[in-house]
Image (cartoon, rainbow, N blue to C red; front, side, top):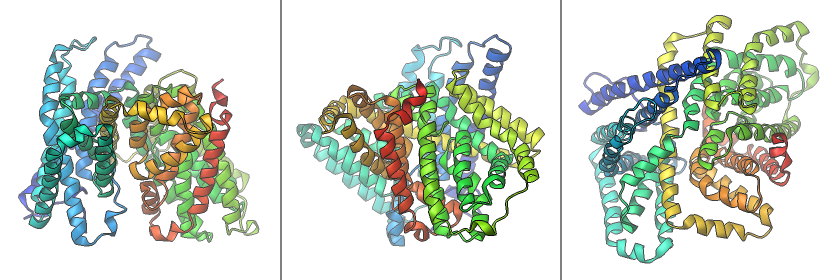
Length: 620
């Protein structure tokens, strides 16, 4: 059964009006969203050129980039809703009967629509109130920027209504009845919810939130609706505050690098730079026992430093290596298990989007996170390499060493590609440029390399790449916005103080705190994915870590790696299913083989937690 959350550009003649209208609306959103990605690159690149080459900084580039960025985030969120790109968990729903799945899919459309209908008025009010605030360089009313939030939400409401119009009457009636009953129960129980104090947090942020996530509702809208319901039932706080917090969460200048690194990942794959790096590693190590396993691990470390997104990493490496690995007798389940484990292993390798997100919400130096993320990734890669050595069926005598001429030729071809991760990491770590500036330079470098060095630049793929960049950026940034609002609501309730007190009395001091955090973030990573878990809990837990003597960079590495294990662990981890999809392997085939790899990763996280030097040794 196909999901209504999935994109469908090709609408047959005679299709219902709602389907045709959605296609027209889709293009009306996608074209400006793609143009905003290009505009963001042009504006930021111009700022870099004038600042570093012409030594004459343009004062308004960052300001204009910030305005374009918020519009990109919100239009991108609308594109993501149409393409089914918003993060959601379907492991439970996928096992249901077709009729039950139909109800769940209808719910996954109706909940975002309901949340945005409730907030569209307060969002408009918030944007109107920003008229009195003017931007410092361009002297524009801030409404021009803040209006992106209600406009993007209006587009998402329109998409949701068109999807609901295509539902069967039984599914639509079932969802309306479900939401009406929930609203009625909350309305009638409002006084009781206020009287039970912070126990009401369990109702909204445990039961309601978890129910929505497990039923397949996109996680961002679960955060948003739980927050809205909490504020409506337990306080008199105006909902315009939610819009303000969402604006704040999506507007951080650090996050400007997110769409650029996503676009860079697409360019690296399209131009053949990723393949060139993999080919060089294969010529160097392909003849030894388990050699292609080492190549896969090395390629994930290298490419993770470019694309910043795990799905993009796996999609760049798998098609090049997996067919040859299969030919050498490696079991399909073993290949997918290693691919998934490598994805979790590389979570801390800069410029991981999780590093950028956690730096934004926790106020940690991006340079320090990029530096601190290198050794933990290498430690886990070495441990996985040792495991895969013993699990590989290859026999070294049957494999031929590549001639030095081949190694030299592949190195020469790969050299321009190998320069890119070194450039990115060195520039940020040494403080030469910010992550945003480096990502802009990386995009320009990849375009030049594709056009003039590798001679591979498929112009027909450019528009779909820009649309995909907008969709993934919008999905990530919108979830950061709703998680910021939810985190604010939790803080206002006093929950953060209670959590801080609870975590400080955990036996074992800072090591007890770290050991409790690891399983907690494995679970959170499995259910909520990485960035949502980080954005939601980082503002609450990092002050606790600092208070009991855990270095913030070390704590970031521990929770990111723990979250990565959850993200790639069945049965709920979406990263695991992404690896199976990319490798075209049934998830059941790898299910029994992945646990040794996850076990090694767990031991690796314990080592990172118990040996602070691995995370902070390079900072000094």
